[in-house]
Image (cartoon, rainbow, N blue to C red):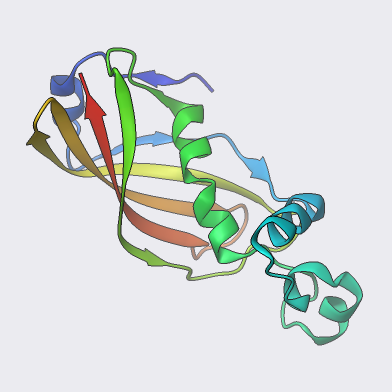
Length: 153
């Protein structure tokens, strides 16, 4: 899958209201989930105890933290888009985040990126993205987020 390259802000502006890119799939492994649990000190059993999760979890396995899923958005964005003329890109924050479905350990997820709005700011633009992180084979997305990225030229 090749990256979409945006050379100008006008190219981005022409895509407002459309899906711009879909990232490659990424497997969410148990070691990845464990590393996230360790780094955030969130060791809830549903994420790290595969034996208990198999017995007690409605998913039958461990699941990724919602914030692990959310934190992968920059990776997915960079895997499918480039902005070579931007001197810098800043994650300006999130307007809304929801986690409609779980990500089971061993599942694959990918990002779908829609441009909702572009606003001029001093020195650049602010892009409001509607991002959907989908799980392979599952109808509901794992995460839906409205994210603001500032690109400075």
